[in-house]
Length: 167
Image (tube, rainbow, N blue to C red; front, side, top):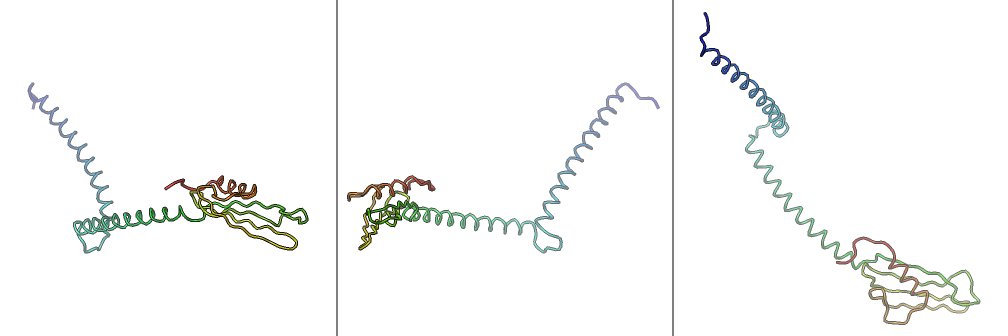
C-alpha cells in the first residue's frame, strides 16, 4: 500500500498530535502524583473525613488562629506600653563624701524608666552619721539642685542602650 501525497502530511500531523498529547499526559501525571502526595498528607489513609470536611476544618482553624493572633498582638502592644514606665536604666556612682571616710561608701544611684523618669537616691556615709536623699527625675533632669555625683549617675543611666525609645 502506497501513501498518496496528501496522506503523508496527515500522518505526520497525527504523529505530532500524539507526541504532544503524550507529553501533556506525562506532565498531568506528575502534577497528579504531587497532588496525591499532598492529599495523603492532609487525609491519612483510613480517615473517615472527606477532603471537603478537612478543608472546612482547616478554614475554621485558620480563622481561630487569626483571632488568636490579633489578641496576642493587642496584648503585646499593651505590655510594650507598660514596659515604658518600668525600671530600665540604672546608673551608680560611688564616692567619698567626707575627707575622714575612705572606701567610697557613699553613693548616688539613678533608677529611671525608658523616658528617663524616676528617682536619684544619694546616701552619704560618715563616721558618725549617714544621710539619705531622694530626688525626682523627669526626662533626665530634676527640679531640685543636683550634686555632681547625682548628675553623673543620671547621665550614666541615660547613656545605657535599651530597647525601643519612645511610645
